[in-house]
Length: 287
Image: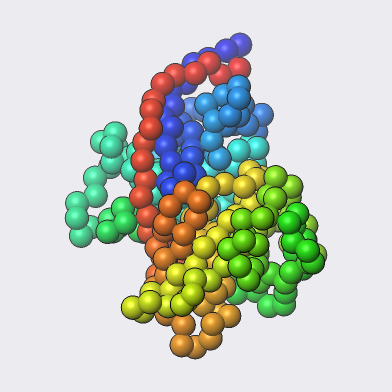
């Protein structure tokens, strides 16, 4: 049996998503169906899928509904697997709500969006939208990372921003460009739930006018290399800040292949800001 569903394609700094409206929670998409929608050759194409559902219409949204979040972001990776959070995705999710009239966000106000990492607060910012991703955690001990293009394994720092990351420092832009991220980086020890892996080169100088600057590439768990990763950008800024020591700034700009994102560290919380765009809408037959 085949049914037809509506969709919109959107992206945040090139990190792209298939947005599926399902306000009343009527859809129960399998991992295979999600992967088919995200397939770049036979489907719409995307790094993941955002299902737009009311918090009260999904069992995963109970905490979000209690916190006043009308909408829940059901995020799935391109392979159909469930992920805890997506920093670019939540900005695209909010932009979709506003553009379709499902929500309003006057300047100076905030809105709460439900996620599997809990209800998250969002505002407008000079880069587009800003989301408070909540408390972060720097993991103890190094993870050894092997990747194509690196002559020897490198130590990586574990950072949790609602989903797991391992951040690796490289010495030059040439080393960053020479990475082959068509292959999955090997982590030792391998985190129980896997991890996104970020490779970063600090700018020289690292800090200008009180703002830190770095460049990064990322291999996303369940996806592969993407043009951008919002939570990965936050993990990268937090790792470089940790390495730099007590004098490091709390404001960062992180350049990714798809653009530039902003990071602010406020106490034990990390906030991500950046743009979001909708590209096109349509309908597709869903097997």
